[in-house]
Length: 430
Length: 96
Image (tube, rainbow over all chains, first blue to last red):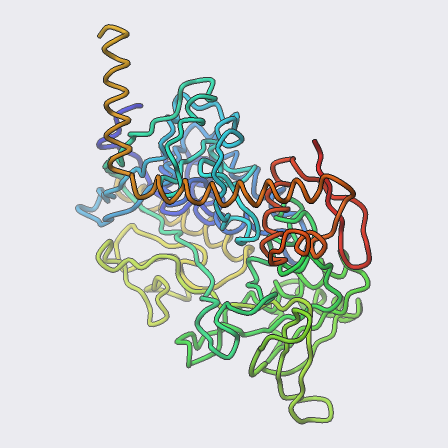
């Protein structure tokens, strides 16, 4: 392996999701050298894990993979995946330093050819979070088929050290004794594109604390809808039944003071409508219901998308679901107040229920970086109206959902803006 | 370093690693044993006609969600394939 103690770049981008990749590509195309750092073993972030995107219904993989590939093959961009960021701060006006750990994959990236023979040879199965926990991967695995880089990682906690992977590897790339390696990156500017995660399934006792059969999160549903998902079709996870009746519970993790998430997560209405449309295509006979507080179709073409969903027969019920319990025959029973019909408390059972969970920050900079955050935990812009990517640290910018919930269109626009701010900052140093 | 010496260093290193990771190794071995039993039972249950998840669960005396987890995993690795539909359920069959 190449020694990588202290590396120099013009810019460092933290996060290899669509925001980080767009910023990196925009800076790289201008001739700046860029380091992209990701905590995951692959770049692509949340977007590569989606089925399709609204309102165009483009396949997420088909439009994200070319961006990932462009970044991976760009002469000015270097990817650092499976890394932990220990510290990032500005030291002088032209020097921002990131202290990092290259976590051990236990596979030599210089030798590995991505043939996956190790994965097929491995005898241990492990629940696969990349597939919503609905099926299993091996203890040595490439995260998903279009991951970049195509280098496996060994899950040491589930490895029996049987040696089969090393035996079948044609290039002798398995390194059982690999150790994490510290290194640092010095750059002139940084873009923080650390993204989001969904609020927890276990935070609301009224919704079953993740213990009810056939109540899944919106990201799990993305996997069920993806063509290369766990079942390659939409099935009820409890028994493989093709669901007849599917329901979405909106604001299941947002606009709720009791959860500490009082804000609107902005994209849940649209992704629920998108998933409902995809479901009505995949299961034309199924009844699909969306229980909502308000529909917020804010972007270009989004209101039309919502109207199209209604015209397709998707039922919209204005109600905040109060409680979900286990129904009969593995259904989930929803209890809600009917606000627009005859009123009163109603109960309905569905084969499959999706919780439209809220968006919360993926990264907490506390103790790592002095960048300021708002009360909601997202990175704070010091000029939210006229320069939304500018943070409290000179020459350190933010982009995408790291700065607050937003859709892919706004994320890409903001990533371009962050790259332009970073480029101007570097010009000002000259 | 001679080939013989290299081999002996590698064996010592693996011994040391096995000692360091003995809890993980024992957990993984237990997991593997349990999995192999289920996979064997599943293959036996599928040795005749294609079957649905509830049918397999009844034969194997297991919960339907666990059976689905194994069926979809073996489908991912090409050992099981999807067969014809039977009502609301799909049937599954061995591919080899």
